[in-house]
Length: 442
Image (cartoon, rainbow, N blue to C red):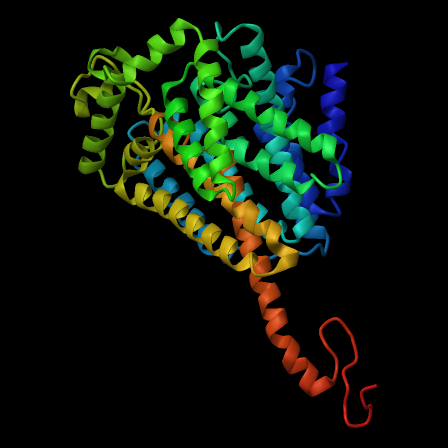
């Protein structure tokens, strides 16, 4: 029964996607984030659902005239350059064959991200994408929060099997990233669907509990950074500060002693084997990048690589940092492109927040842009301790920012043309007749 339900949810919309590629993109986002087929045990478990969605998207682009835009934005260009550079680093990879599966996975994500920048155009499509990406993670993080409550935090929370966020640390970061987006969506439907808005707000503490229930030290640092920035962005700063202060004692009393023992290792990292292993991996990545302009390619958690570049070759671990992961795999050029993507996206989100706030009909975009910045803060802070450089979610947030900025610019251009159209044609952009010498005003 579960297999049939998953197939209906993912394959059912694809015929419609042949006429409207953006619908196929929603299915792609849903499958790539939630991985619903990994929660089945029958025929759906091994089905190529993401590939089916991608096929429908490309078929729709070729055979329909649905509205789309060329990928000319700065984030799109940077992402294309990063994709090309990754292909170069693969050609000079230390272990080319073991790198191929990861290369294929990353290029698929980047390609579909660029395609999403082309087909996500209208406000309806932007809103739909935010809903799909948020609910895909929120359903898991809320469930994880309930599990943490029922187990009194005694067990760790894990993500979808065989996904980027399967690990408890990675899933904790995912749970935190959807918190600001959930707050935005709750505000969007507050007037029309009050009870559903309350349900969404109720999922916020559950998501935070889910992150805490992962026993992830990186998630704790990401949560503190996210909450600080959320308060800074909020119009109700005092209320949020009071809420956090009031909730902190209850959370502290609820969490088990094992959680505090793990968090205390942040201060005593010199004696923590996991922390020392990460520092060793970071040294390896830096030394490798200094030696090879193209980096080492994928599949670097290898004893032979660590013997060449690591201070301690006996602990060959993954980078556990989005920054050192990219540095080791693709060198300083790859890291520069990677950081440029987030810098430019951040600047564009700031531009959206500033310009949309002066347009009443697009004020929601200003709120969304600010919440995406909060979400990215969680990613960039928590990602410093996690190997999540290629996880889909932050790239989808780039798509949303690009689409909003483009729509605002097009709207501004239309408003700028309106007075000129009135002068030469006597009509405004919305078709209302203006007084002329032959048609006096009443």
